[in-house]
Image 1 (cartoon, rainbow, N blue to C red):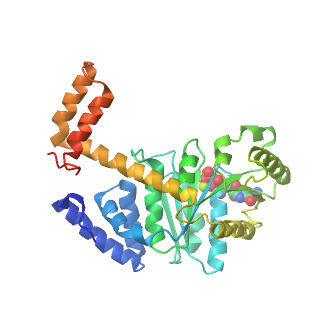
Image 2: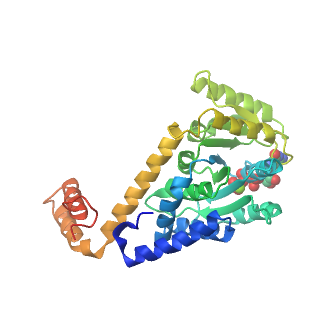
Image 3: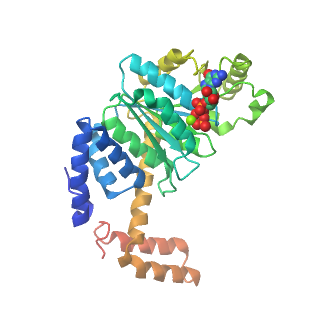
Length: 335
Ligand SMILES: Nc1nc2c(ncn2[C@@H]2O[C@H](COP(=O)(O)OP(=O)(O)OP(=O)(O)O)[C@@H](O)[C@H]2O)c(=O)[nH]1
Ligand SMILES: [Mg+2]
């Protein structure tokens, strides 16, 4: 293992704690796994050190995003999929991301009750995460959490998110396969379905198949998506998550994505994810460097120069970057 960047005492402490947590988590200790995810959520130095160790072990899991409007039945469907996977002896982790609130909401508590059936099952891991407003955003935090669970050996990692604007696009960036859930009986409101939500769909599911209008909604969606993307719109399926009807077929469609190459290193979704992760890491690095007290003077000088219009913001940024990176190209070496 390479030493932590900078080699500071804090860096070494974080690295040795991360090493300990990674070792026990990989040996199957769920408490250590949960601690690693907390570190990821809070973006601590331990998370970074852990990721350095775990990233090479990840890349095998199928990351499946489940998104859609509130109440469409995402959590019920996730529970049904978990049941299906466990019946087949397969392992699964679930990350429920609530992008709307900085604090884990009540809905997720309800989901937890629903998942209590798996309390003693070591092959199911359920975690809710609040997505705070980090520079790297939802995608990079979710991506890091998925990498940890992936490295821990879960075959499928499901990410449940409420479709509230930008978040579903970010979920799509974190997942290999994005399942967009809709509920029937939207009638004319079908036009109001956020185009963005369907744009990112690899699979579209009309849930609540027991309700009238499910078939009609599915047909409308097929016409709409087929029309927009030529002959090959995403498959539109019908499920009744409450009874499990259609769930084996959905799981089969999800599994087919692996055979179709969605999990290959060069798959578009994997490249997009890597891109988001690198961007997130860069934003993180730059943010941290800019916050360093040793750079306060340079920052202050730049800000005053820009305010006085003696220099434009881009030139000021270039100058700061030179200060940050230093002549030998190493961060902080100019100090
Ligand atoms: N009739 C019917 N009701 C369902 C079905 N699936 C889910 N529901 C009900 O729909 C409601 C919402 O289900 P959830 O699974 O909590 O929906 P969700 O999309 O996770 O909701 P949020 O997390 O709040 O966005 C619950 O009352 C479920 O019991 C179904 O297939 N048929
Ligand atoms: Mg839910």
